[in-house]
Length: 221
Ligand code: TIU
Image (cartoon, rainbow, N blue to C red; front, side, top):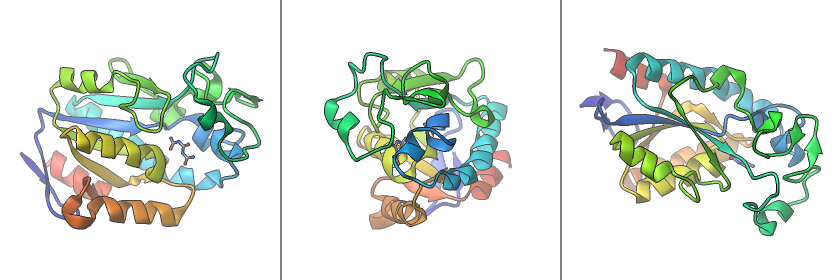
């Protein structure tokens, strides 16, 4: 087992049973004209997560450990987008509307693609998910069972929405979950801080958090 200096206490992972899950590093959340900006958010916060997520990808690729990317997307006919989701809030552009990167959060459109700095490489799994959590209405559970993994390392955006929801789903399914602190971001810095706090409160009620350097040092020793 590899021991990582994490909070609220040491995170132990089995190098033969650990996968990286990179949540929704899509143009629609990170670049101008996408869903994140249409919701009224300051997308500049997302920039901070890009290099650390790229570094994590590099570390997992060097190790040959499984990498899974998720994308929040919907079918072109919106058959997998509940009206309650499409109508929520008062976005300038709703899911399915046409913006500068094509139709918002629609599979196959430029905005739905993963940003080039974090793009999947051959052999990596890409999961399209209609919800905030990556287990809902996807094959993720079966894919993880196929890999035989028990420990999941998380990166991606946004911390309190899709990352936290997926971590909680994974925790309920018995996975040991670690989020890398610099490799996730929120449009609201205070929400990121609160989310990391609540993950590791109560003895790691839904997981652990660790700085990237602690993870890198532990796995490259
Ligand atoms: N709005 C927001 O913070 N997030 C999302 O809608 N999706 C993800 O977190 N991926």
